[in-house]
Image (cartoon, rainbow, N blue to C red; front, side, top):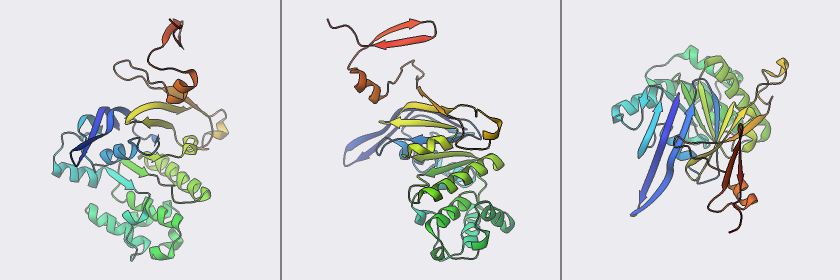
Length: 286
């Protein structure tokens, strides 16, 4: 679904260049539920904006489905945003029209995408558990209910890729679990690929795979093991994640900064191979 290779994004402001992404590599399979984590300034939101068609990449490869985001024109970019991507913002005001009801908000998003299907709008509202509030205006909803309305709106154009920017950042822990449960349900029932950007490490237990971004590059990856028991298969928190360092297409291995600092790695290391294991050691003092 997503194939990024050597992705670069440079912003220019007042003659100063800021490199937000510097050769990032990322692959996401169709139908995967995936998270991108990183600290503020790591480049994760820039990546999401590129995948959503809101920013243009400077260089590299960024392919989503059949769309090459580095080469498509403005008209194709509008079609891409209208037909392929659904977007959920942390700030509800970017998704919602407060003077409309829940149903009217979803139907308005459909009209913008090219048509209105009231039956499908009601189905989306049912999926996010808001049927009893379908005719309520947004000012009558809680923060969690507004965010669930935003999820329904993001699916109004039947996207194949759903992008969520800190979707649980402004709600409590219970509502966060509820929202993640909705993502999991939609992912399983509709096959939509879900990409969640967050700084919350606890989300790692609720998605299939997590990639960490640091300084505009992919730094490590966590993949969920298979559930241990058959009864755990439908539990999004079941199973554990294994963390992997990332090897890029040039064979370069990124060692997480925590490990470098713990061991005292500076500019070079000693590598020894034994079977399928590679040992990294500090060089002997000269």
